Length: 504
RNA sequence: GCUGGUAUAGUGUAGUGGUCCAUCAUGACGGGUUCUCGAUCCGUCGACCCGGGUUCAAAUCCCGGUACCAGCACCA
Image 1 (cartoon, rainbow, N blue to C red):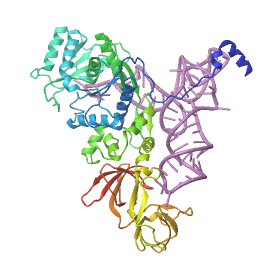
Image 2: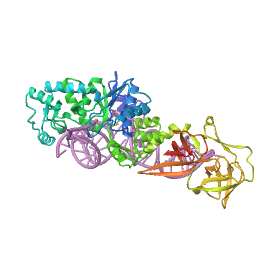
Image 3: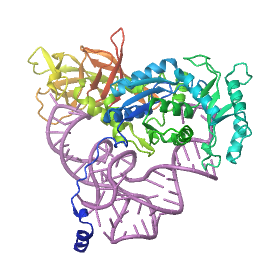
Image 4: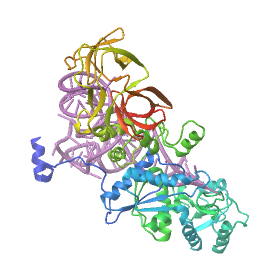
């Protein structure tokens, strides 16, 4: 050891210096940060999922770090397989604001920018960066796999321009699938995915925003490449499933003499409780009636998480903690819940809820409660939140407790020690004087009906019960004592309260 | 099959050649405190995929395996 120390002091004295290693907090710094323009580009074929929120949060956090901008761009160029939902645009916009606390600096609709894309496409054809191919997908795949040239590729430029016009002509006799515009690449490229990749295709199905104005629509790789350039995007952060997209687009940028943005990737995320996040899959299940809607508490959508009472701060903390890396990860909701508890715990009022599995007991008070009212703190550590005011329990009053909580001796929280026998609860001192278990309870004359819906996998467990009488508003998040956090989703005419369970 | 990517405790994460018998969080377990099974405090458990190489020194660099993921859609 001393020998090494000796050697080091001669050869590498800096290695002996104490180096302060601090744990890096938050996201890794970006490269090239003089100007930062980012984009988040969802497909509005449904509202946001938990997966989308990663993109929103990572992009907006980087934007905050470098005083940059985020463009919210609706990539709505597929009307067939992933048809845009006209309401989803607005909802995604709102969800973006909810998650980040601000509006996106710019909003772009791909479907509004069709003229521009088509102009660029024509330009690429005239410059022979691309060509119109009429081979079928199967035929082309065979050629591509053997690195062979497709018969269309070497036709002269004017033929390709004629073909381009024909693609756009409703009377040209070409329908969906008849022709496609391909970007010319080196066919000897080792990665088969990149060889003469398709850029635009004919799509005659109606678009919910622009109808049938356009026949030829760009594919993601083309539309996104052109738009990123036009918007001056400096950094692209995307899933690593889009790595080949980066490579294709870089080839196009080279043809056009443009410089491709810095690109970073995240890996695949699964949540133990949900699996993946497939918008199309959820859409089908909702239509089948398996779920009540996009905000069904069993679904991993932002709408559902909001409905249940998750805080955007918790989601933000969660994604920042995971950071930006290319690992495929599988996380537990517990991790998000833990963040959420930290955020909401200090400001959430406590309330007593007794489930349907309860027993009514009669109070036998050996001693009168000294005042007219029973004051119970709304929060154990935050007196500023005030008290819940219950009428003082009297001899003969009926008390509700969870059946499973009943034992010979227990304590009604914030009220009295009691001894149980034959459906009678005999008070045994108001002061807490021993270690008997503390139990939440209700005064039978001071309750209103409530149903707590607990998502359990594919099922929903609806627990009918009673909640203490109080002032409630839809949207309130409460902590049901000894049960967990829950959010009020509905208060019906007969004052029944509907709650959805959040977490412990 | 071709192409690319990733591998650190149960789950995430820090770490870019030397204070690393490895960080932090979460989890599980045990305890203190508390009028919630909440919160809080303390403690315990537990990891560098494998094999070579370079080097005085490797989680970190190189090579080779292995595993997992993704792309090869006229989807995004």
